[in-house]
Length: 86
Image (cartoon, rainbow, N blue to C red; front, side):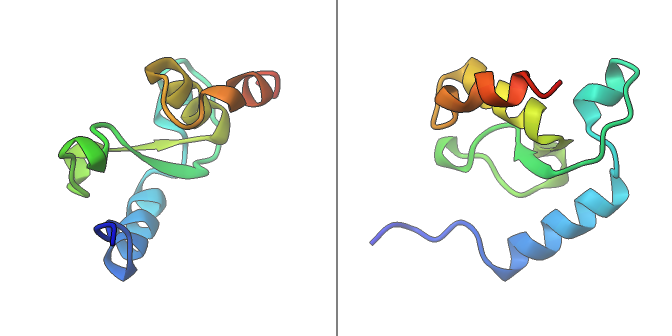
């Protein structure tokens, strides 16, 4: 059985982090105000990352898809779909 990485604790952390960071941190650094739609793990849990706030980034769907597309993991097929929304 796979190790469970997400649960109630993650839900609380994600909601709290998103409330404290209401705008996508990537877009904000480029001067755009885009609402946060996801909380991204900078270092994936599968690679030893944690839910610590130093490992989190508030992102919009487009930036989240682009990040995963650039690292070539599970979302790489969806990058074009979200990138066209920007």
